[in-house]
Image (tube, rainbow, N blue to C red):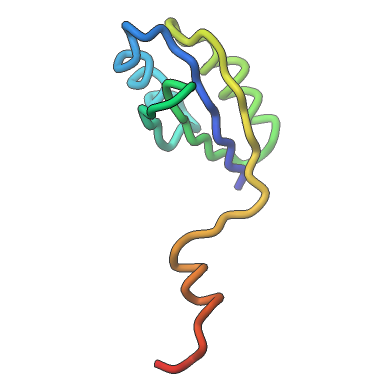
Length: 92
């Protein structure tokens, strides 16, 4: 499974509509409205790298109201559960 984190710049007056349109795309698992220099963060979860291009370049970038994107591919995932087990001393 490939996870891509996509920073999305959007037309400010249309952020809710843009977020809903992106969230409806196959391969997009979550979309967050955030503060800061970007407007939305989309999590894309697909089987291979070609699928990332299909979702981001061919569909997400073409959503009306998206003005720019920046895509980051995740190498490894760390969750709170993983961190707790990694630092466990076995004193349960």
